[in-house]
Every structure is written in structure tokens, then in C-alpha cells.
Length: 481
Image (cartoon, rainbow, N blue to C red; front, top):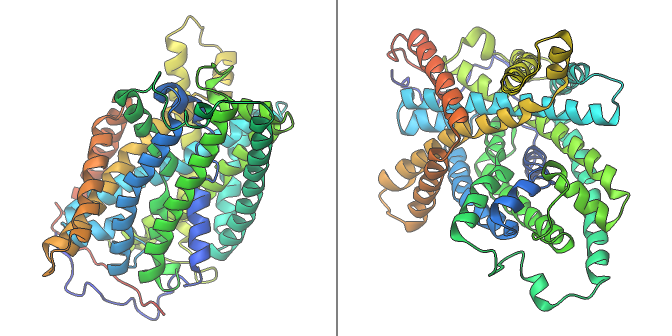
């Protein structure tokens, strides 16, 4: 399989393309919403237990690690401002077949994100309105995600701005309440440094174990690059937006973790690890307990909405390049100028997958116990929340493969094939690749098994679609104007 001679060919004027309407601010807001401004809150309890209180340090180390990969994404977007993102980068710089595999791994990542967000939002909404079964909420959120995304990218950008403001207000309230609570009681100087380093509980293994989980705080930043064809001045703004998003989320997440650890010392166990941050906020100011729960629902809603947007554009890039059937995946709606078919596909996968994943996870849980398989048992499985954990474990498999591929592509383009051997073009992609490889090798067994099955299915499909990877793929780099 090889690329066509016209690598930088411009699509035909007769074919509708994506509209360039996203500013740098829009891109940063999109990235922040997909990653979530309250990203560490939902996993804070797990991080605290794993790191024995060193959550702040773990988040900052993870931020540095992701910045390396973010720089590679931004630089590759300069060369290829395409909706195909990592798929295009790797296919062009490494090998088209490897690019296809990278794209297929990204499809898994991008499909799972809206799926698990649908599951999480349904479970949280069920707690607020227990009279409505969780399975109805799953249908509701999957449909809403899809309908909002088919309205067009500027509609999504405006929604992102509104949600960012709302979540920012809650974060500010947590900071204000936290500062009042902390300074309302006397503390020794060591109390304020323990979140970074506590000699009584510190261990290298604990810190790096916590860091491997803290990387989840940043998963999704790569989605910015899938909007390259809808961004103004993409060769500049994609790099800036990617790096700035990682910095903003990293600093904000570290601040959230720092305040939390001052309010609730690591030596004190949480009533519930999964909802630890809600208890922390409630200790600072009681009304914050339900507010934080609603905020996390809003955050996952935004993440699901944004990740569906990115998934649709990834499929568009692969369809336009003939890696997927072009007549379906490579078309754009002439009215809203979006890949409408792909939005519906991702929505259908999220809806169906939310039930399938819940059933698989639920049966696995029930099979280990003494529960009889009755109608009531099946109803409990469909209304349960086991699928979120299983889906989250699988998400990193595809994401880390894509990250490694992009780092390799950036290394080849800007260092190996360049006449100037600058360390700035060598160190970030090498460190980014090695860190991602180490994290990928330490994934859980269920994630590796599920990811391997997905990759095997993609490779078989690719062999059929491209006649053994001998058929040419086309990579159309659109105009920037």
C-alpha cells in the first residue's frame, strides 16, 4: 500500500468541505471540555490511595509527560492540517499500513469515550432522578450527544464555552470554600507541603503508580488535532491550543488536588473512594456535596459531546483516504458542513455499546456471586454502573498506541529526515514515545485482551479493504483559507 503521488492535493471544489470557523480560543475550550476542567475529581480517591497522598506531584509529573506528546501533535498538525490526525501523520511519515493500524486504534479510543460518558451520565442522572431507570437515561444522553453534534461545529463550540464557564464557577467555589476551611484552623508548616512530599508515606513505586493513573487526567487532548480542517490558521493554532490545554488542565488539576489534600489528609480514609471529592467539597462547605456531583455530570456530558465530535472527524479523515468506505464515511453534509453520517455512527455505537458493555461487565460480576439469572437480575445489570470501569480500562489501549505513533512520526519528520539535528526536535518525541510505551506495557490484562481483539479485527478489515495493504490511500490536505 502506498500513498498517491499527490500527497498535498486539494479536494475538488464541487465537494463540500469542512468550514474553517474555530478560533484559538474555541480550540482551547474544546480541549478543556473534552479533558474536563474537573478531570481529577472523579478519580481523586483512587489516586490518593495509590500514591499514598502524593496526588499533586503525580499530576504535575504526568503533565510534563503529556506535554512531550502534545508538542509532537502540534508539530505534526503544522505539516498536515487534516481531520485524520494521528492516522494521517503516521501514514505519511512512517508507513501507510502502520498509519491505518494507528487510525484503527484511535477509533477504539474515540468510540469508547462517548460510550463510557453515556454510561456515567446515565448512572449519575439516575441518582438525581431514581424514578427514571438508568437504561432510559442511556438512550437520552446518546440521542442528545448526536443531535447537538449534527447541528454543526460552531454550535458545539458555543456549548463548550457555556459549560466551561459553569464548571469554572464551581471550581472557584471549591477553592474559596477550601481556603476558608483550611485557614479556619491552625496548621503547622509541614501541612502545606505534604501534598507534594510526605516523608512518612513517600515511595518511588507509589508515586509512579499514581502517575500512571494520573495520565488519565489528560486523555483527550489529542482530539484538538482532529479539528485541524475547521481551525483558523491550523499550522499555528493547533500546536498552541494543544500545549496550552495541557498546561491549563495540569495547573488547574494540581490546584484542585492540592486544596483537596489540605482539606482531607491522606491519612484519613474516604467513606467512598469513587466519590471522594464530593465528600471533600462537602466538608469544606456542605452545599457543595450535591453541587460537585452535578458538576461531574456536566463534565462528563461535555466530554461525551466533544469526543463524539472528534470521533466523527477521525472517521471522516479515514473515509476520505479510502481506509474506510469513502462513499459513506468520507462525505460532508452540504448544509451544516459536518460528516453527518459519522456522527450518527458514533452515536449508534455509544448507545448500543452502553448496553452491551454493561451486560458484559454485569454478567462478569454476577457470575462470580450466587445471584440467580432472573429478570430482576438482568434489570439490575442494565441499571448498574459496572461498565464505566471496564470501558475506562480499555480506553488507554488505543490512545497510547496513537501517542506512540505520533511521537515516532514527529521524530522522523523533524529530526531524522531534517538537515538540522536540533535537540528540540529529538528530546520531546523520544521521551514522549518511551513514556507512552512504558504505560502501554503496564495496562491491565482485560484492557490488553480487549484491545488486541479490536486491533485484530481492524487489521483483517484493512487487509480486505486495501487488498492486502497494496491499494493506494489518498491524503488530501485542504486549503487553510
